[in-house]
Length: 418
View 1 (spheres, rainbow, N blue to C red):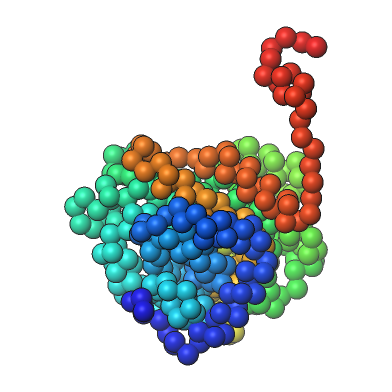
View 2 (cartoon, one colour; view 1 turned 30 degrees about the horizontal axis):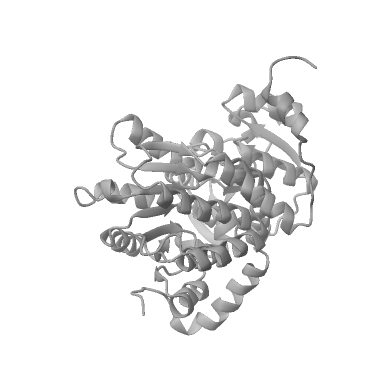
């Protein structure tokens, strides 16, 4: 039995039901798992993952274990951990799991350290915590990594900064930037699940409300589209002129965050940066405004400045809503500023994570196949993995597409007209 630290082993059967339900909606990853089971392309490779402990993640780990890898898991966010899934991974699938819903920061750090101590050869991250800890650990541990996979914009910012400073000592594959990942996971997955989380936590009516999206990357685009579809008037705040222009041409209002603060009813940060909403914004907000974060870390909303402004203190008004009394107004913070789509809802639907985790599984296989040949630095997902994943998903959806004729292929390769 693998070494584990979980909340309740008795939840394993319920966890298996949840994992199998998700598996039924993940045909692409399932087809990859079947091939891995036959070919065993990662036999004996140690893979450590710091990801959200959900049923969808469990099916990724099942695929990697089927490939012959030794797999261990800890939680990227304690509020997203599904304890029944953790129990089932341990009991039914032989995965070392160290995660419990609501675990303390101290416990989470201990779980992360245990994975680092196992000296993994590949890391899977949702925020670069694990690969960063490997770099901060025993001398030479990072050099032993065949590669690392990162699936968040925030994590890639950290890793690119490490590379620029000469501290990154292994190859990293930016799975978050794979085109198939961005289309499916960021735009459609986070777009839908963020609204799901807000509605579950606060039970607010979005129709007729002013909904402010701070950040208009792939994820912000999805949230803005879904909010408009729910009947809200959407304002976009951006620092990038190209993204701001795109938002305006899509029909959204675009303005600085200070101006939007006076008009918004619901605010969602999704920038990948810190202090996107801070004291100067809080002072301008309406009574009853709802604040949520759909970025990675709980730093996008400045919690210390919000608490400092709360002359009347704060109180829990719903299980996932903390209300701050600013004297003349009250502001409602969802899920402690953590990612609302995971802390209040269940994250991406399994059909979305089918694409995301298929890319991760195939990229792990790529890293093993090219062990020792990938240079240090941040690499793109190979185009053949992007296209193979898209084709598998189309096939699962029953969609057929055209193919270029040989004459068309020659025309594209040539330079002469006609």
